[in-house]
Image (tube, rainbow, N blue to C red):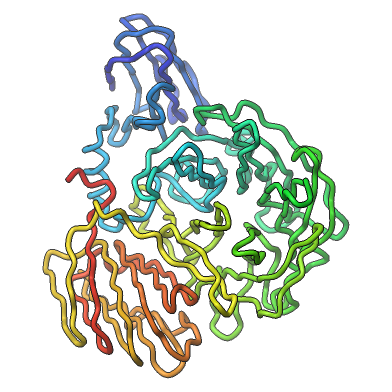
Length: 562
């Protein structure tokens, strides 16, 4: 198979290739103006990263032997156009090489009915936690945990996307890879989660966890903290160094997901890490004058005992920020299973004060952030007047269809505030007006019907009492949100048992977002939220609300060419 296209000096091609059968010829080669400039003569039986940079203008011809090798990911890009265009993918499916146009991407996405229209998803591969979120030069940078070789979890990389409006994203080169080729070692691990900070020189620094080659998912592994500084064009790090290896007393193998910030009042860099201390899920605090030489400060927070008693193993993906003068801890606990409902993957928030390196919880009880189980590993970024966050929209127990090219989506971007009761509230940053297709007013009890289906829409209403919103999908399945008695419940008729609920005496307002089977609920100005991923329907054909009038806003996809 071959592919030819014009190439410029400085242009790069990145690919991950493995051999499947012995071959006498090169598995992959590049010619420029007829001359061989790069070839992969042999490759291992596991995916290996290769990269090539052109030193001249001309016509590049790529040749590949698909009967003897596999390519999991391939793209080309140029530093001069990366910010405007991102990478250009080279399709390798069906034993074919093809430079993908924007329309090719649209066609590929449209072949997957459950591909969301508004929520960010990777083109291929596995995605989980958002990482290194930051805003720079008018653009939002989203890094995320990524496995390029499969739609199942595997050795962790950091992939990268950039947006000017939080909805239209350009794909960038893979930013971080595992320290070693873990497939060759028969191990798991890699570049785990972390955060970003822009220093006074305008350089973007990243801190992340490297899980060293591991042979057990639950015990005995080693996690160290690394720091990376990005090149100006964000294609890869300028350098990476290990900055923290020593475990404080009482800490076992869980020691990960650094969140780093600079506290002006203390003239100090602080890092928090998720961990387990003497068996209790906890957060650790480190401090530094320069962000590189880190010293253990103390155990910042220990989760209440009922977490450990109900399977909680450690804290992971912690976040910590100041909002309207109040400090907020975001807490995810690995393994915890809520005893009354059996829910897991829950996120919690604790408000309080932070002075001189010490966090004092407020009298407010620990808050469950989302009553669904598909909102996890939340990461936020911003300043006091505007804090935005994404979470991984996935549940380990609910698998995506096996024929999907990808797995994992991000939540809608959410904006954070504290209400009068000091509860952390989340509301969606709405899609830009350019994506609005239509708006429909629905009277109380009306039935909205669309045989063509609505892939993405937002329903808003203000009930005076109890209500029932029924969403009917293209498969006939019904997803129901109702407020009855003192509970707000989201369920799939005939399949859920009512466990996805929140105690809510009354509901004043509701915003429900539907997107190809994703449902995100925001009630009472975002003080109550619930997120679920349903694979039973990809479009809505019927909507009925009893208990209030409503407005339905339909949206086109972010990848639409219309």
